[in-house]
Figure 1 (cartoon, rainbow, N blue to C red):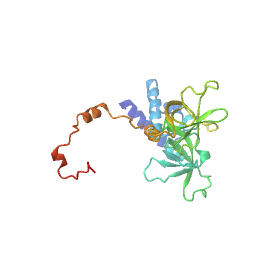
Figure 2 (figure 1 turned 90 degrees about the vertical axis):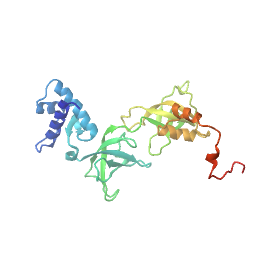
Figure 3 (figure 1 turned 135 degrees about the vertical axis):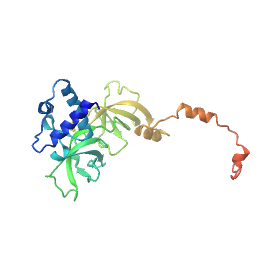
Figure 4 (figure 1 turned 30 degrees about the horizontal axis):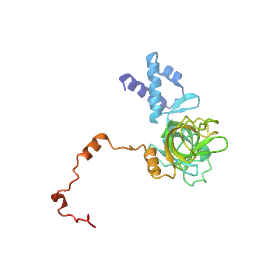
Length: 263
């Protein structure tokens, strides 16, 4: 970060920490700090970086506050297959926060989110735990999902392998020609997720790879490889080194070992 950016960062944090501070938007913050011209561009960049880092939070009407002042918590969302979840705060030592299914919004498992602590929540749902509501998604944890292709009467959809993704993914298909890919019902596929803005509809995506029939040998292993983005092939230098290994076993390698080759 340039010196100018560091200075603006310090100014923003100092402003938001003032006892008499009231939530301001970008324009008002720039005016309060006396910033003009290119400094305002640097301010917008600084605000984005601070929000992404969880050091400040953006609330209604795009105004900024310190998270603690607005009872906001930044962390990683862990979703249970039943639909509810827990926010694991980034600040060490803070307890997890219960997030009811209706308060998760369009967040998905492992997303980095901001949640507002609710003082009106029915605390008897999970005794002794704070409860909150996701108000913003800072970072999506996944851009692809592995699952099984299915079809209802009117559309195709993919059932995620990971039960913590509780929503089926709608995939586009031409009603006359079927899907644009060569996937068949029951195939394991990789879906690229599209932006999901409304919880009133299921998330949508596009099939980018067909792994094969779910029951075919080796497809379960390939599904795991794609799910965790593992390399499916050894690097070329590793293969070259393996090829240089002699297939003959010398006498020194046999010493001290029990030979079971004829058993």
